[in-house]
Image 1 (tube, rainbow over the protein chains, first blue to last red):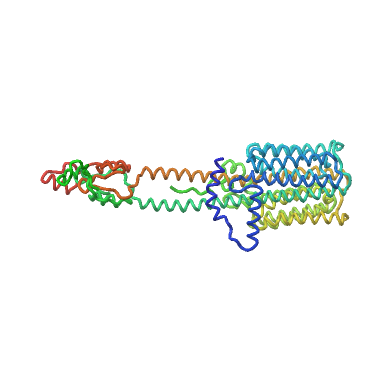
Image 2: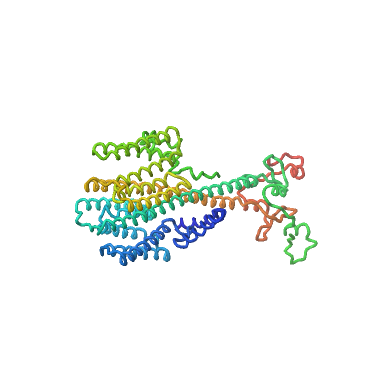
Length: 307
Length: 289
């Protein structure tokens, strides 16, 4: 919470610096693209990277699996397990996206979402002929996504568990190959593997590149913050040098209230004060002095102060 | 009050004492933190690891009696990795990282053909290639390399569909199964580790900025506090021409000693200035020195 609010604060003033100079259609297209992405996965200024990743990944997973379920039902006769798994993954991703994007539950949903996907991918290992099939590529996406998505606490545990799960599934493939559903034809296998390979490579590239871009942005923000802080620091130093702070033990004359300065000169109080700080003095006459020196001009009920 | 550099305590920039004591050989191999940039150290580490891996592959190919093409590939990979490692470590040519990425790319494509295309273990290497190349490259190269890999994979798949005879099939189902069972976990672990490091870099940078930001805020708060305590005398102060009393915000006239003590951290010690001494105590020695 604390991190989010401070982020917002200092990014607000950096927004103007961050806006890149518009150079032709490329920059304009880039700006439009960034705004569209921000509308889909959430505003970068108010959503942490993990939440934006969760939104993006769950939306892509939802769309991809929904398309796959449709294609499977209409065109290819896949094993029922495969279609069911894809439908489950689709439903789970859709709900996650909706809850995270519109109800702000992203940070709490990351781990359950990851665990459900791990279960589904492990199940699809059996329906897609194990090592030979497309589930292997999904494992890459899952792990790369998990490293970025999962909250810091427990990340290593879940990533380790997923790797162990992949190892266990390899053992299953080698020892009990009869547990696996085989592809019906080599052509079918080729199609499935091709689609998943390209799709998963694209998702992994997108995740890693986004991570790099965020890293660069973060570095840039640090540099900006540092530059701004140094400039302010310099201004403060200059201001401090100008202020002649009134402190310490000042010798003051008991009679005329003159003050002895550091060079030993006795200065009238007005001059001394005017030299040290932004103070100007306006002469008036206080009540007591008024009564003392100007009593002949006063009415009886007058408090006596002139200012 | 000086502002600490945001890079002062970075995980990438600094070296912890235990790491230094543990990694003498490691530092000698990939370069020390003090005189080698992070990109160069990364390239050194990756090329060194690839060199060792390709040497191990060469040995394995010779021992297992694999086809000649695989020997040659492993041998070429070993020589090229050694050349890039030496160029980077000894001659400080860190721009070789692009050449290294291209080399890895070419080798992976060749491995694709020699390992039965999409039915083999080379497919997973593309994930290692994508994540690794983005870690090594910078700027436009970093963004375009994954695109090039994606196009190449699509082209390879299309080629496999049209000319399946170009692929070299595994000799036996057992060999294929062995290859898949080694390549898959290996690629998966390497990819995960690479992404883990990239993510750790991002989180470190973020935490560093957060810490820096917090310390700035604390400094600010302290400065404001100090400014309040200094109580700079500002504005137009009404002062009595006769007794030098000053009127405060509430309209009360106070002796200058009282007013000054209330608005600045100072003490006043009463003396008699020479002029008053002259006027009031003429003839007798000064009472207060």
